[in-house]
Image (cartoon, rainbow over all chains, first blue to last red; front, side):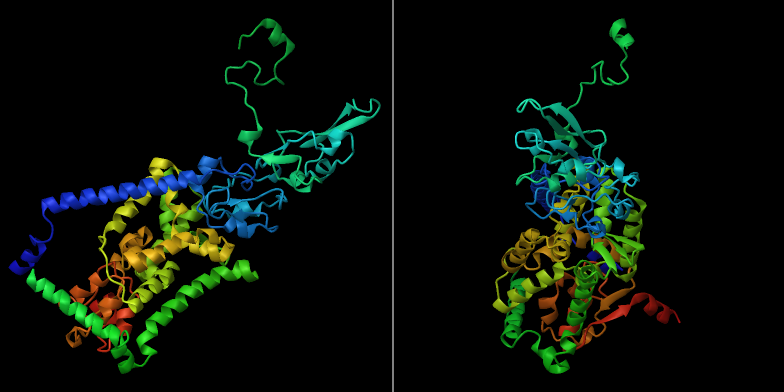
Length: 244
Length: 302
């Protein structure tokens, strides 16, 4: 019995000084490692503006909290649109993204990528793919867009899954010839899903229309602005003065 | 002090002798090559089978297991997920889908029963990398440099769990080598393999069994799961031990052997033991074997 006691409280095991020293050492090592991998992670978490998250993806910060990088969405995608990011790829390593210019989202009605997501980083509340907000298409280069030159290319408009809604052709007088019309592709940022089909098909060598993340593509009215909902602002309200 | 140095020298001599004659030559002579590599072979088979089950999906369209070790779907119905990544997600404050939590529970229950670090030696792909480093280290007779404390992994496990709370992101998943290796094979994401190269070089030149035996937080978590598992390796024939040191040489967690060989309790109950069975393989005296402690207890009670 006494032998057992002796081995349990062996004075050679650990004394207070050793305990404090080793705890301090381990604390330092762990702290440094923690700083190291946190720095690595935050350095390489930046999402390339041309890397688009799958439909239903949470905001980038929440997405990086939730995504377990299992690749189930990638394997569920019937069109090989989704890829898992590699190191140095423009998205946090192991997370899913796609590049519209290579393979755009085909907007499957049953949204298999969202259904299979175990973590909820792709929001299961998204049931109608037309409500998806993967990004916003922006006609980024009016100078080279053929329609802005007065031609009837129209390819981005024709291919849009929400034709006449997400992209419309706005008729305008052609100043150059002075007697023709121009049909300018115009994106409706409220309905554009960011599927990227327009960017994919643009006939130029470098696409004139590009899907960008909403935080880059959209402006935002200041919170205190009276005219936040211009559609609901009536003439009467304006005449009365700015009392809300 | 002199006593311990003498002991160490004796150990070193023994090790040198065995390396001159070829590692575990006694076991191979006594039992034949096959029996001296049985569990090594079975483990490789198990590791590669799991990897193949995942890989035949993206490679050939045969979907038995979708996803990877972080989270997967067995036969399109049963969710399985890595408890550590699930815990990290929870620590960021995100509430995941029920499937992720269920999957983590299934895996936890499985390894509590099967033996925690059975994952490390029978499933984890990084084991292939660190075992090759250890093999090469033995072949080249590389010197042992400083030894890191074995419990560093538990501190790292704590760190991995606390970091998401502080940063809001699952920091560990950037560098976690287990899914990185799987993603490289399944999705062709080879550019993360530099981490595995780093681990290989660490194990080879700097610290023997540095990664799996000292640092890996996933292994630390599975070790905690394995405290209660029924099947363990046991030195049932400890009396026959001839101190050839082959088991110490090959064991990834050699500190667990001494209590079993020289202490009172034959069974290796230390949950750091990965139950790889290499000690069973390399022992010409057949000292070790797997034992089910619950069955054993029932037998003793009768």
